[in-house]
Image: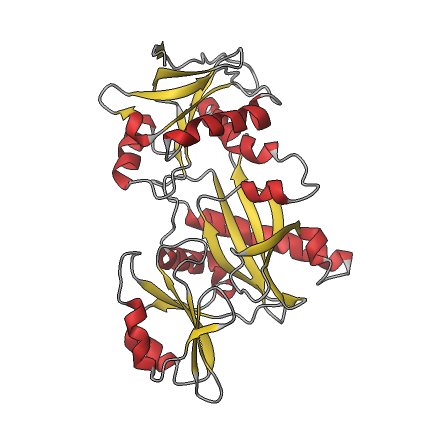
Length: 370
């Protein structure tokens, strides 16, 4: 491919209301060379062709960054629609789409472009740190009781009937999650993603062999919630929070994921619905549904603010809720690398382009604030 030099564009022009900008260089960092073209074409189709954002978009991989020269080899979409590989200056802002990005790369990149300009450098939250942050943000009543895993702690909890989850401190999509139930009859049942137990240990002490690995940062014990079901299906409520041109968190999508039959893990979903459409199965009263919708947005905004730190800027995050049988809201998960592909699965979902556009608009907002 032809290699040439492309410099950061965009000269601020002062106006009474807002600084007008053009050609702000924004990068999307992806994990593989194979993802570069498809990512660029996706954004070209959904965002750049439909709006007049004052940006120049490039897509690159971490291994193509030259930190000494402050350049990166990237794919660039030209004005005529062609795609070329170019040697570019490091972008003004970078949207990280590399799941599990190495911390050294993130730290170096953030040091060169600015603390708040690498969005979502952390793609996997530490669930124990997150739990404490949510509790400090006055959300304790909406997060299940959680504690670090210790064998004696689990054995003590299993002295009485009840259900607990043991999950990795760092994990995604329910991987490594075990549900452990002590029945009234005294039996122990261990399940993975489904309601069907895959193991019935004779003694509680046998459980410890499942949780000796520390590859995912160790393990947590979390109280199981008696989740409200519809037609015997578990479901969750996902709030997508994004920053856009205003620079503030906004809830841009509210959806429900319905688990497959026999599954409690909603990451293994059979369908995704708009919030109102699915929740009509639960709440038929419009004012009551509106109250619940607003409460979810309020709690999601509190959770998003609680997760962000000075060194780990976020441009988007999703918050997963469930309702228990008493219709109390619980926050089960926060995702620092929310999948937007699920919204393309929803029939009638309007203006999906705005979900892809929001982080780009946030980059423009930061440029204007210089």
